[in-house]
Length: 201
Image (cartoon, rainbow, N blue to C red; front, side, top):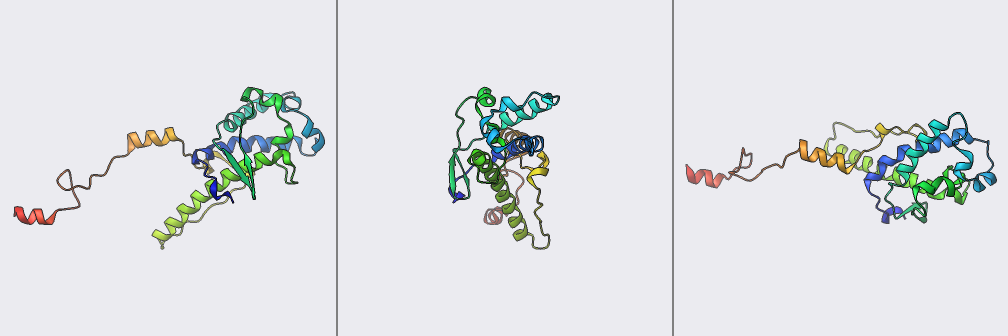
């Protein structure tokens, strides 16, 4: 069912700050807040109050920056399609969002469905790209087998994610690559026009 959703690969780089913040919330509130309370309390009511508010603010700001950069129209979780939209500006997120929406909850709680669907969609996108690469490499080089490495969401690091940033790719294309000239008579050639060479001799 997710085949019709074609998210841009640039979304992959936003997974790390999202997961880092979600992991932090999971550790901080594990068994310390009921589902009922989490569904009623807004983000600003439960965060940014303790001795770790500086770290919380950084993790939250990184999360918000990533969340508002995601370029989905919709995401899919199992067979359910979920519209992805920002209903209010990022500055209002902490005042208008229930903390329950930021918990990864496996009990079919509708509060966290959008977050889980985003994480799954981004993860699947990276997995498909990596799998295609491994399959291509293994097909083209049967002597050398490329094995996929697997990392859990809790252990996710920036180095394990594809960084397909358009600015980085543009800089790489402008500074480190060249167009290959394969036309005869316009450079150092490996494709020769043997009929023309024989005619000249």
